[in-house]
Length: 490
Length: 98
Image (tube, rainbow over all chains, first blue to last red):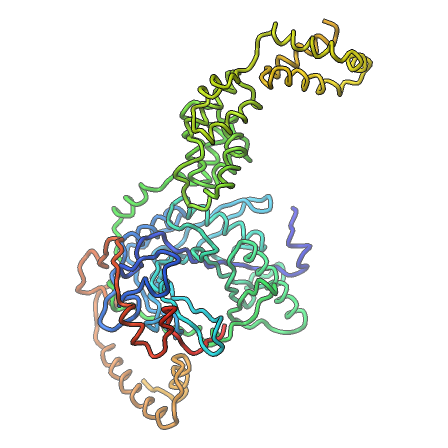
């Protein structure tokens, strides 16, 4: 077996687990009615509950609970019928209550797994647990030298913490796991997956051990990675650092480290050194969360078809290549668009081709893909299907179809109307094409002679000439066929 | 339950409190008597699923709809904070590293 880790780290085997914090796409916070909108004026989205003022009580956001359950079901977790919020106590200026409401020894869901392809192999990562918790606020350290600024808009925003078992073995595998998890969360529409805005954050638990050993080495927790590249790079750098320490006769300290993307290094986080003692206890302000099997089943009934299943179906039902099926199913809206176009009567393979090249190019240009779900496509699925049908029934060539596509983008007109108005209908009249071909051949007797003497590359030259005289409308297959015949002297 | 001075120092460090020596001793005695009372409560046998479950409605945690309710709390709270950047509407705190 090809094992890329072997060559890279010699005798050492990295052991990696990820803790992912996903911000749930609710309108209001986890325990109060404040808005979760990103980018509001500092402290505008705060109220007595999330400011930690005395005399207030948290009330659970029912949708957040359902989002977390949906995620648990999509990843094969077992949802606990009874779970419990707990207080995680620590002091930091962006945590107004002095504790975070989280879950501890009775989480919402346990077990489960995520399966994905990485580095050419099928991989499974087991999930330890999924629980709900509230986010902390944001401290801003730039500016004044001896002060930090605190914005509590994010305090109380609902998060899911998704903890994996230490089943990952390479940085690339960790990044692929995270990509798959993000795709599932986006399919479920429970998280927008935006790493820049912090709606998906990842901490990596990394340790190394001698290959073949079944005990775990001392691990560190690395934070502050806000892109897939950072996750991969930070883990790689941390693995190398640990190996260097151990080979130099040193020992690894269990600590929290911060990734510095500019310097490409991790450094211990001083404030967290003593903080592992969080003195958890059950949250007395919230009753335990009870979820009946009937409610879990009802939520499960709302599960969409997940990317993995959809990809397989696209290959078998629509005859797509593995690559096309994989790319089309990376986004739920994209897969939906493809299926809508198929339902409207387009040929699946041609549709896949057009969507992944022309349509997606426009989507990118217009940055429509920034949204979790593209509501209005540059061209409707039905219009694209109509265009593709015109290619399939040979009314127009693939090349002319690109002209029609551009016209559809600017005018919004139906493809058939554009073809008629602009006279773009493909010329498949054998007589007309033969005349055009003979004219081109007659104009270039020298080239015809060269071709007949064996310079077959000149075929393209003749085809180009014919296309020019037919205004690009000559049926390419027919043009090639007649040309071949005429050049052969037929 | 016996509380030692080391326990007091540990908790004080977690809470980022600087305690004078006499305060350490006084708090040690206070904590010991508080926890002693908890020990007393522990002797009671409470049936059921553990803390917070007894006597609660069967449907568990109360839930609310996911609806935004604007609060003007910050307008009152910001001016009341010990240090504040009113123009930028931030709370200002002594610098915390990291």
